[in-house]
Amino acid sequence: MRRSEDDQEIKISVVGPFRVESADGEDLTPRGRKACCLLALLALSPNLRRSRAALQDKLWSDRAPEQGSASLRQSLSEIRKSFGVYRDCLKADLRIVALDTSGVSIDLHEMDLSELAQVRHQDPPILMEGLDLRDPEFEHWVAAQRRDFQRDLDEKGHNNLVVYGDAACSAPTVVKSMHTIRPWVRILPQQFPSGDSGAFIAQLVGETIVYGIAENGAVDICEFPRDTPGIDIRVEVLPTPQSTCVHVTLLATHTNTQLWSGTQSISNGAAFIADSPKLHALINQAIDIACLQLGNLFSDQTEKVASASALQAVQKMYRLDRDELSQANALLKEAYETDPRGIFLAWRAYAQTFNVGDHGVSNVLAQKDRTEALVRKAIEKEPQNSTVLALASYVYSFMMHDFEVGHELAERSLKYNPTNVLGLAFLGRAKSYLGKFEEGYRLAARARETCGPGPHQFTLDFLCGITAVMSARFDEAVRLGEIARTLVPAYRPPQRYLVPLYLKMGETEKARQVYEDLRKIEPEFSLDAMRNASYPSAGLREAGLLEFSDKDL
Image (cartoon, rainbow, N blue to C red; front, side, top):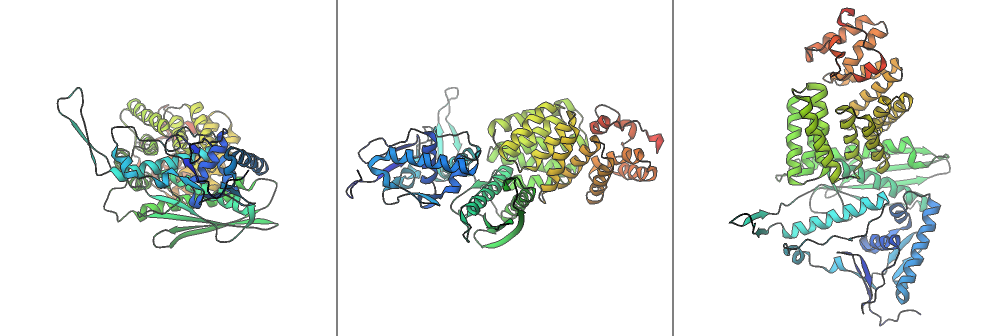
């Protein structure tokens, strides 16, 4: 039986508990969670439509394309069965799945958010309440949609003052809702058809880039442009019998100015293209450059923007100057007060490793306690943020010398984003300190190979050098140390390592020159001091290179 032209449309509710019902109140909600999630993806998509490849990537990201395609067909069948006489409200062909815009209404599209924002004595509704899935891609999407929904509520009600009584106080308390502006990114559709496989790869690359950007600095992912500055990302894919060409372009939305573009050609082989180091390098280039450009887009804004301040703080902390580190900490602290996101706490904790490693602190134990508290809270707030987990991994490994915890956190980071170079490098470091020297070196080397031009590039050189030392690749360790010394002469750790490395290799004159240069920026440095257990030289100690003293120079 088919519905007649007189039948009214069905309604999908996404504000609060997810529900599908007919005009007369009949419950049409599918029983299966994946089917409900599929409908939610369509309901919150432009024109109520998405490609099959995009749906598979969101709901079955951990399955092979063939398995994902079969599971998608099964969920579509379940939805049609649940819709009954309304089954033709769901449209599908070989490429696209859509809801009939003339037969389906979405409550969010018809709702007056300003009225909802006024009801401040009640807890605000949760978008798609209870509609969660273990697939990390869907979790990322749901989190972004809920953030956008909450932001829209805040924007509608940010001029309101909230007055409420406190039983312990005689006078009422007045709280002003803070209006938060965030940089944003969105994925543009392909301009050139590339078939199902090309569309799938383009969606995969685009979403990996935007999630990487969002994780680094609390940037929103949007499907429609906002009035504030943002970046559009377009990914084009050209599959050929021998290789697959991937081209990425970054555009400033409101001016349509091209900010950057990059291309990689990946040979077709037995391995899945998503595992290609060349593709990872292209993705990380796009993430790093987009983060830098987002900061630039907000440079002339008079209103303080938490995310832009945080992106600026990350640049400052890598300049290795005590005053710059202090400014970075202040910016991150202010960003968190404006927009309490875990990533701001994680960057603050990570900045403390520079203080301990490069500048020293008077009370290391107290510093460790404060830093661990920051990390714990960061993970609590964003347990699936790959960058939060990676930074937490390094803090536990470097400051607490808890390499098991560092190893676990780095593995979790890569579970959510396998392209995260900080997760790769910090996992390599942890493995090396746990005695898995070859595996540790390979991971650190891959991080260095696939990193973008971000400010952490020289840190990855150094970490790769550490793992090279611990795997007895002394020539490689010297080469990386010399690169760091030339490009970033204020960066002390690689120079500390170069002195005993040169002595180990019989290069006494080179060791003496590095020693003298290092004493100019670190007057208290000595080979004798490096033997102290509190000195940040565990890698050399593990490699047996601390038998030298200042007398050997």
